[in-house]
Image 1 (tube, rainbow, N blue to C red):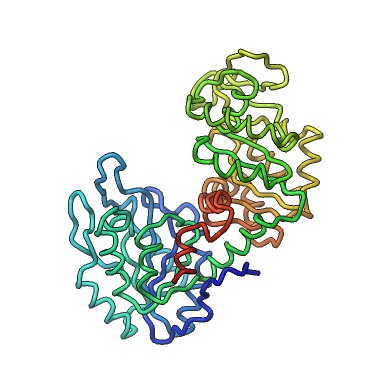
Image 2: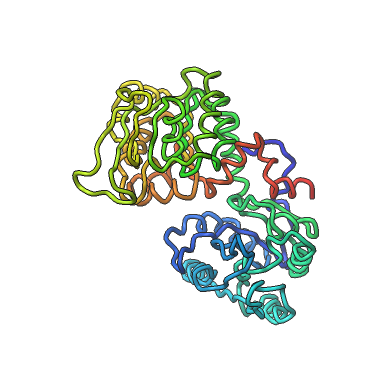
Length: 429
């Protein structure tokens, strides 16, 4: 059930004969290939509803990061094209979609939407095509611009349609296509966005005991959600570089690859966590590798953190050893939990997988808990390592797999779903 946040819903919109601009999160293309269509499939309910109610669809999504952060220049290539998404939707839904072409600037990508799109809109209205799929929104200079170009692009998007629908929970950043366009059109939340918000409320108001498992390659990207989770959760389990930095900070040891800024964040977090004794469940066995970025026989081993002395230096720690999930305290914690939130890949992929496999298998043993998985890498690794469990989880009422892991963490950090800029924009509209 949706929380009472006055969110305008697509089911309450009059769509008949209307051009409906739909922001989706179909960011599933890597180097021109779709590796998992889950995020596309999750929006099909919204697309079907629009079509069934007589609406005409114009879809848009971002794909990858075509902008060079240092220079600001945009590179438009097949690697970040929406074409694989269009082909997937056409084959799956037996529809005809067209992607408009615009004039490219060598450094700014597309500077705007040109009037040449009008002939496609005419075809859409005349039922010669079933939908338009705009090019990657990040190919447009105005999408992430910090000046008037962003507002201009939002106006151009709004000029294409009668109604705006946001169904892109994973696209939480405040960009022209997620936030600004909603100021110019009647705007509604799609069914996927509604579903994500409903399940996010199970994290805000969890059935206790609540266990959170978080891992990551950088402490600074997860630090604020970690502060929120250690206050809300009954137990917190860490993995990845986050756990490495935590161990360095707490036990005064050194681990290769742990950078100074991660260590600084970890020290502050350890000090803060001391206010909540017993909440962090430490995984006692970790995997040390002598060689970087590889797994070579005879050059990695299991380490028991309880035997480490202050000042010890370790090589690269690339995984939580599977034995950690056979420890009585850890098993007991996972079995007692009634709500489990997971945004975690425990090991360095693709070489070190044992920790992630053992984690997911232990979670699945708990048949009475609600299991909420963050999207992104967490979802991809579950599918890669345990495909049977992944398939079962998609259809299981005991599991929910979010389409946007970063969006979930941002919402946890904010403490309310209305802290996400696109959701706030819909409510204010």
